[in-house]
Length: 220
Image (tube, rainbow, N blue to C red):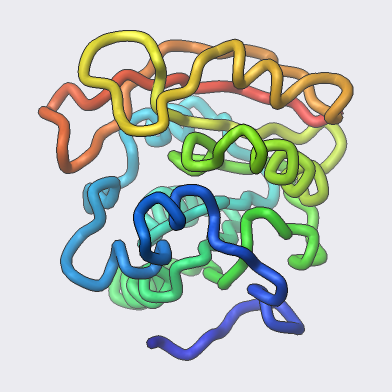
């Protein structure tokens, strides 16, 4: 296992319990990266994220929550943004750091539990969640939403790309618009500014990808 490194002063996984996805899969997230690419690791940034970045959506310090092997984070960093990518899978983080070094891109990657992001001790203007929210079940979502709130600056923005429950060939753990709005609302410190139909690329869908939602969520 790669040596742990990052910005956290203590064990980033202290007190962490396996997520619902890990319990269902019967293995930790890290195992997904040990024997070839994970199903969601397409080797390039998601087209939806590339388009967002081209439109100037990302600003200030950026957090990529659940960064995997770093393609989205590295794309943003290559544009000159200050980016921290965090993940629970240390094999993926090692891959991300190697990519950054090989490409000469300055980006930071750290081991962190998405349900305890407050341990980072930092705040971000923009947060990216590309395929993480939909891996949490209903009982886990309030904790994740609160975790995001702890690291997102007032009036900051979360861009969330997740599998949609509408359309054929949807991915695992599809999410409805209603579920997104129930998780991110004024009582939890958020306002859903927009939810638009999108596509997300995976290794098990064709070139058109899977139905997705792209949500723009503002921190109150």
